[in-house]
Length: 393
Image 1: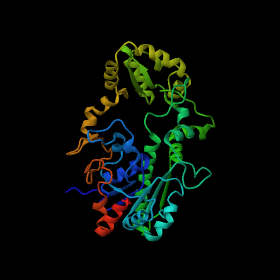
Image 2: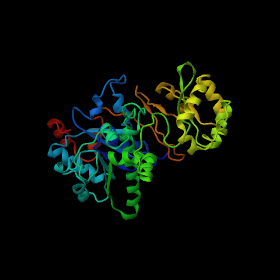
Image 3: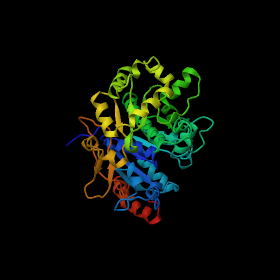
Image 4: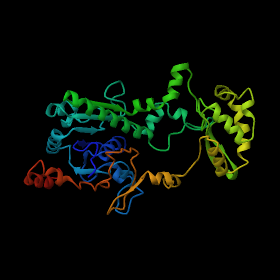
């Protein structure tokens, strides 16, 4: 039997929606036992974010980040529910939550309270703005953070409105950062024997995502502007229209590649003093790009891609989602996954480990599917029956 990288690690997941559940799904894919705590009746909000749904009624949105988990319905607003969660936390290695700062303190489920009952607990908090600072009290939403962080100011057409990215990229990136922080805390615990709080925020992550564009500002003090599908520091590196109203991406990253581009396109732009080096091409972008665009219209997308690939120039078609998921490479890498006895299909995990590979054990759970199964290992059947009668679970 294949061993999982995080086998034996127990995760208590108090999170919901996308960012933090994305983190806990990564942990579950890597073999951790993840107990997803949901509200009775309603559950995670994304269970109702429909359409679309699969044949069994599972929301596609919920299925995005909740496979390989066990669902427990516990009412944490009631003292009995809080006591159940505290008991589960005593046995957990990791707790993940995305409540507003201080939101769990009134339930006795904050970091300091649970640290007292389990000093080895790694308490991972994902918030909009972090655990401290003047905006720490505010809720966080991907769309708003894309705006506040500057990401939208550099996304979209140069002469049009700022645009958000097509998916909640800040949520997803922040979930990855939280995963990294948790794994680092696990490693640190091996040496110290103690857990710690992992504090990751949407705003911090989004600011880090500005990457070289944010770094450009730190270098020259100039506010970066939108360039649409072009690159701030590399030319030609953008979308071009080709014959038949199709489009493709050319990603020419150095002078050698640009010489190859010129050869493919039967032009001598690389011999022009204005375009001889990348810094010069950036400087004379407005002169070069229209010349290239005119030539691009002479051939189809597939013709250009065949020619550029043969010349070793990075390029690619702009696929629709269905085309992308059906690429032979995507199929070979198992980037869509099905489950036995379930209509649910999910996007695959991109992490490929040679000795402890990701395993797709279970589809996203039904609401409360594992409540009694899990609780009976901690409590007697009479207590569980009473809690169920009282609507606590």
